[in-house]
Length: 187
Image 1 (cartoon, rainbow, N blue to C red):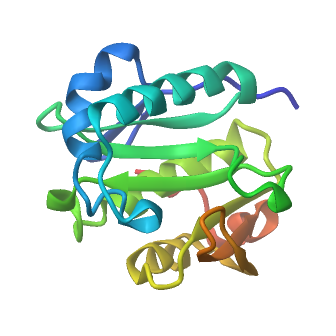
Image 2 (spheres, rainbow, N blue to C red):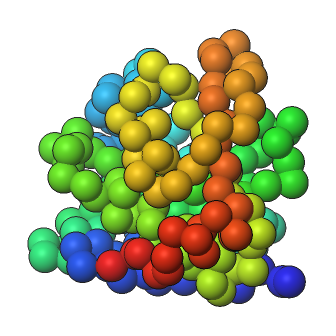
């Protein structure tokens, strides 16, 4: 099935929408937070690095048919991070695959927003995206992300080494298991 295009997804508290170049000024301070990029960079990004990141993500909408999206607080309209589906180019041994991922500004942690955004992206991937399997990848010491994956129904698939030599766990959710859990859950 051909990729469905990059959607705008709405949940009770969030909007996931495609990035645009004009997002740089709002994204850069979030990316500058060391905690935002602790796994795997152990440091924040500069505005220049964020600009390159943004260009790469936007170009992947066309080349991959999937891509992470700006994560917007529905109540305030503020960008609070990003989430969505993307091809995990950084880990070629799991390709072909589509990964669900999320990163939130530190002030947004602990509110269930990663689970809400992840569920919306997973539902889209299975309902509209025609995917049979979605992966999610994390460093095992990032227990919070592991718990989000557990809540979404992902199970361990593989432990391997990431591009910086770090240990990473690859989890997966199949369409069949997703259906067993009940759909949709995205809000």
